[in-house]
Figure (cartoon, helix red, strand yellow):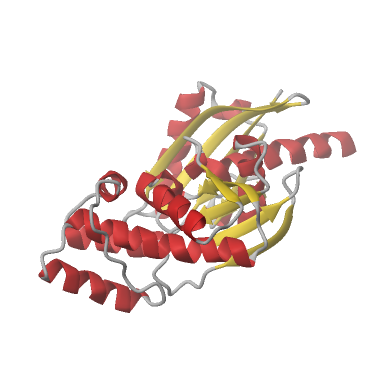
Length: 273
């Protein structure tokens, strides 16, 4: 078995996964995550790396290949780097073997990635960075409403009368939220309205990419149960033949995929040596 690690450096968080890979497949040994906030990204990488090794109960010298993805080119001890969509596609296939697409919902944008049975990227569609359907936008709104990101999903699922916000522009959406708060709209209803607006955009993205069947939610927002629930509602509303799956490790899909590709590349390098 080859021990490999993947480090996914995003805009707002760093994730790491350690896997043991062999002819029979890959097994996740440990994962970790650290939010960057205003800290030095390299310092967060170092903390997340050590935490993942502890979770996997392996020492750094036993890791045959360290692969990065996202903005991981800043990681000096990496051996290789994989494009983010490639890593998410492979990670999604590992977490949900029947998935033929991944919906990567990150801090700056969302991507609908169509894949084949080997995890290769066939096609994709991506939202723009300045729109309201991003994790950074949701984080800003949560801060304004005085709730933590961990509370957002649960609160959203308790909404009774959700009010949608602009799904086109983050500035307009933030204005909508401020107006709602001043009108006394319940926080849960505001959050659910935001989730529905974001989910509507993501569902249209999946439709535009011609995706059908099982889709695994990946990226940091995949851990938001309120957003995943809203996405399922929007997909049903738009009558798309799509089933949204979520895995407890969905947020780590990029790191997991990078680690698996890293193990694969290590074996190819050994064969060619």
